[in-house]
Amino acid sequence: MKPFEYYSPQSVTEACTLLAQLGPGAKILAGGTDVLIELRKSTDETAGPVIDISRITSLKGVEESGNTIVIKPLTTHTEILRSALIGTHAPLLKTAAAGIGSPQIRNRGTIGGNIMNAAACADTVPPLIALGARIKLQSSGGERVVALSDFFAKPYVTVAQRGEILVEIRFPKLPPDARSSFIKLGRRNALSISRLSVAAILTRDRSGVITEARIVPGAALPKWHRVADAENLLIGHKPTRELYVEAGKRVSEVMISFTGRRWSTEYKEPVIAVLVRRALEGCR
Amino acid sequence: MKLVLIKTTINSRQYDLEVCPNMTLLDLLRDELGLTGTKRGCEVGECGACTVLLNGQAVNSCLVLAPQIHGQEILTIEGLAEGEKLHPLQESFLDHDAVHCGFCTPGMLMSAKELIDHSPNSSEQEIRTAISGNLCRCSGYQQIVDAIHETKDVRSET
Image 1 (cartoon, helix red, strand yellow):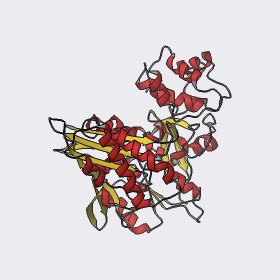
Image 2 (image 1 turned 60 degrees about the vertical axis):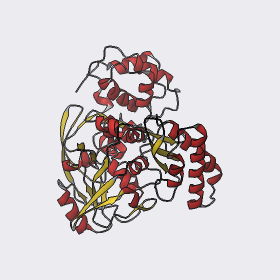
Image 3 (image 1 turned 90 degrees about the vertical axis):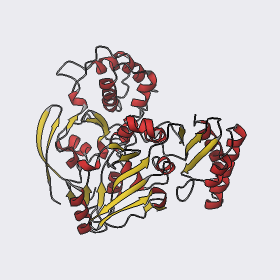
Image 4 (image 1 turned 180 degrees about the vertical axis):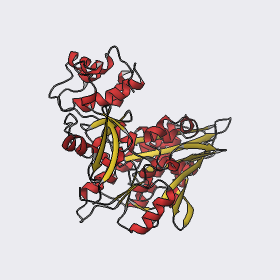
């Protein structure tokens, strides 16, 4: 690894000041599961500087605030999957976190890092977008809140400005009658990058009619978002396999309308449709 | 490049160290401290050969920067046995022929230790999940799973 200057701020303010002073080459380090690989690959004179935010205690924890769940960015995937709050109020996020990497990766990797790294295969992002998450960014110039669905420009590129640190993620608790699921398709059972994934949330009324539907595919679109075309097919109807199959096909069509026909389309076109169907069936 | 002063406990022994920040915990253990039981495999967190326990949690030491262990507790394979007395996991691995070439073994044992310290009576599925970040090219995993499943007289250690 090339040499670099290393900083370990104890507060968000200190981290923001450092980030502003150190310029565009500075890398934020939290769990290190992506950053250390980048540092090792660097061919520049210096790989850093590196700002290690892992000791900032105010950036840790999962809390509830009335009807809202607040997740601090240094929360590891292990902490997410063990959190009673998330298990109750956002179970699809727990499922997604449980499938990331391996136990060793989950014990270090953070939800903040998963978001800020913005890989197309990031598994916490589709559930968070389905949950309507909003994130708070802080810099030495102030803070701002962005809807997560507006946060990504393209794979690996967010709209975070230079000097901004992710400090909070929040979303409304799922109502008790909502059912959710997350399906990940990878080449292996573990240590597996998502080839495709689907986050789904369905709410039904007393008579079983779908009143709300949210579908967010992962590793499928250039930018993550809900697929309203497919969601609208479901609303006002009772669940049937045919209905779910149709919704799956619609997601596939929408995907192709964004990506065009690429080398992977022959595979992804039928497979995303099936994954959507399975995800919807999983909302029980 | 400025060196970083750290205090850490490794295998119950306290260390005061000056480390280069561009060193991983794996480099520190093997190259600086001579604790070569922890193995260097892929160095990108995909094989688990470098697994150690950091504050009781299994981590890939190739993905931990040395300064990050300041104030933390590390357990490596060298710290598993008590002198000549093997840990029950180690006894069980030997009894179940779970050690072939031995390269994955330290990492496997550390992942297994985290599991049994928290859940002494895990199911086979839970065991497989616990070692899902540790690759073995020799055994086909069954002997390792059986060894963990059959580990007797487990005492939870801090």
